[in-house]
Length: 131
Image (tube, rainbow, N blue to C red):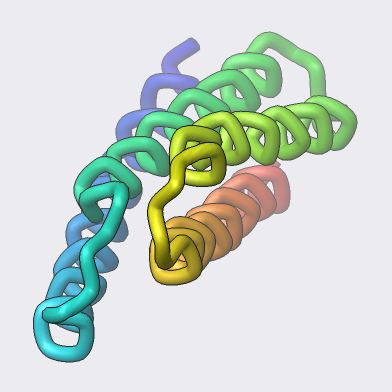
């Protein structure tokens, strides 16, 4: 269990660092290039969603791996599918609304979505390779 805690704390610190960096870059770009665009979701809500979902899924995979189940590929695929469903549920209020310009909000959501997914895959494969 000590290894689980060590990996979890390391991942949490890395995730917070990446989140702060991505949020700062995203906010800067929106401030300078999208001042006149009104967004349905504030950027902080998008990043909060991604941070919570990524942390929860990594925790599940890390716990499963730490408890002796070394074959986690199926679990990872199921959680990735669940992440897609949660993304659709998160965007559902936007998609069902009569908000005029939905495309900027969708880009605001899915660009960080894929960056967080890449980060998650990278960290999981890194700790699997060490084992």
